[in-house]
Each structure stands twice: as structure tokens, then as C-alpha cells.
Amino acid sequence: MKLNKILKLMPRGKGLKVIDIGCHFGEVTSFLHHRGYNVLGIDIDPKAISIAKRRHKNTKFKAIDVYRIDFSRYDIIIAWGLFEYVYDLRKLMLKLEKEMRPGATIIFSVPNVCSFSKRIKCLFGFNPNRDKTAVSYSFTFKQIGKLIMPLKFEKKEITYIPADCMRNICFPMPRNFSVEIIVKMIK
Image (cartoon, rainbow, N blue to C red; front, side, top):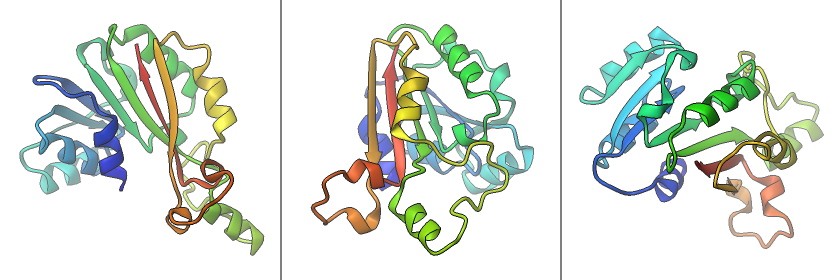
């Protein structure tokens, strides 16, 4: 589901250079590589990159801090499940805004704090945020809107991945129960 959603949002064209920031074990990077994109997966964790290189032999990976990357070299930037681990998200967004060339696209996802599964866990007294390494566990649609509103991009689109249990149910506000919030912006 996630990989197909990414593919639907991706611009098409030969020779497009893609960078997958926060690629971890390289699932998204490898998926895009096998669909013809010229993609580099980066992560700050050298152990994760080592695993990615073993799992995906013909795909390019590099262990590097996101702040050391020159984003002007890329047509598409993917950040799937990364932003909840970034200490100063505003700083990173401003770097992307400054360095991305006109026509470049960024696609990112963040977990939705209001997802159906998180609401159920809270209802039964469980902490829905099990990942202790995350800086900001989840976001709301309003928070994401406030984050991207001042950025100078030509097009901004916010969408979502619905919760599995909500896919076939007629629900008044499915986005508020979605698992992930997805943003696509074109410079």
C-alpha cells in the first residue's frame, strides 16, 4: 500500500535523480530503483545503511547526515517516515526550500496522531507511541498545514493513507483516522 502510494505521487520521466532521505533499510529506495529511477538512499545510521546495502545489492546507499546534502542536485526528494526523528524540522524544511531547484518535488509522510489505532490504544490505557527514538511521535493535519504554509512552493498537496479497518467503511472524516499524513510539494 505504502509503496504504491509513493509511486502514484512520483513524477515520471527518464533520468530523474531521486534522493530518499532517512532510507533506513532501503525498502523505498530499492522499490524506486527497480522502477527505473536513479535513486540514492541516505541515512545517518551507518548500521542501517550496511543492512540496506546487503539487502539491496544493486541500489546506491550512503551513510550521511541530511544537513550535508546539496538538494539542488535532485529532481525528487523522498522522506518517508523521517520527520518524526528530526530535532529541528523547521530548519530542515527551510534548507529544502532554499536548495531545491524550480520544478523539483518533495514527497514526505508523517504519522497521524489521530489515527484510529492510536485512539483505540489510548482508550484502553496504552501509550500509542512505542518508538522511544522519535522526537515528535505524530502530527495532526493542522500542524502539517502550519509547517508547510509559509514555505515558497508552487504546489502543496496534503493527502493520507487510510487505516486498514476504515477502507471499506463509509466514514464522515476518514482523513482524521488515517494512519499517515502525506505531503507532496513542487518548487
